[in-house]
Structure formats: C-alpha cells, structure tokens
Image 1: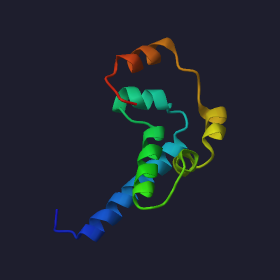
Image 2: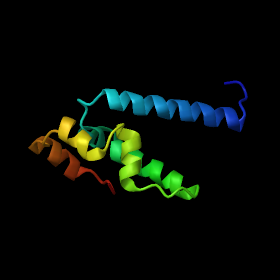
Image 3: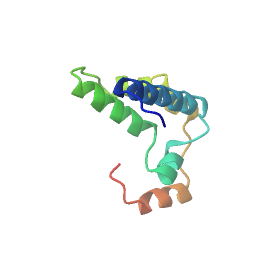
Image 4: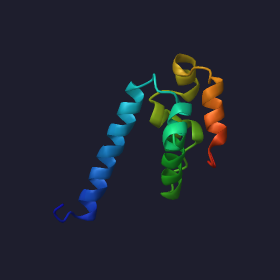
Length: 101
C-alpha cells in the first residue's frame, strides 16, 4: 500500500467500522451468540468498545446509549424484534469458549 497519513488511516478505519455496523444492522438474522461462537465478538462487544472509546475521550456514554449506536435502536427493542432463544448446540459451543465475554 502506498504511504498514508495517520489521518487517512483513521478515516479509512472509521469508514470500515461504519460499514460493519450497517451490515450488522441489516443482518438481523445473524444472532449474537452465533457471532460469539464463530468470531469471539458480537454487537454487544462492539457497543462496549464504542462506549470505552467515548469514555476515554471524556464523553460519558452509557451502556444503553452505546448499544443504541450499534443496534440502530434501543437494545431491548432489537431483542424483542430480532433475538431468538439460543438452542442447546449454540449454548454448548458458547460454554466451550475460553472467552471473557
């Protein structure tokens, strides 16, 4: 890759993040537990990281506010509309992980 400035890198990273969030908002069929089992992170992880970054920058963002940023709506609304009950196989795979989430 050609040399890019730190400002350009930050802009590209931000664009990629926005695209990821948009993609996840459109893929409501993909459950968080499946994401955790396959990738080790989920929408809640993204919202936690978003909150941590905001708080580190001096913006007191609550957990609910951060989740709304990622989900595009209040978390409880998203859960009611899109979250399904985890099946035994999903729960077993999640339990087998060595995750701190």
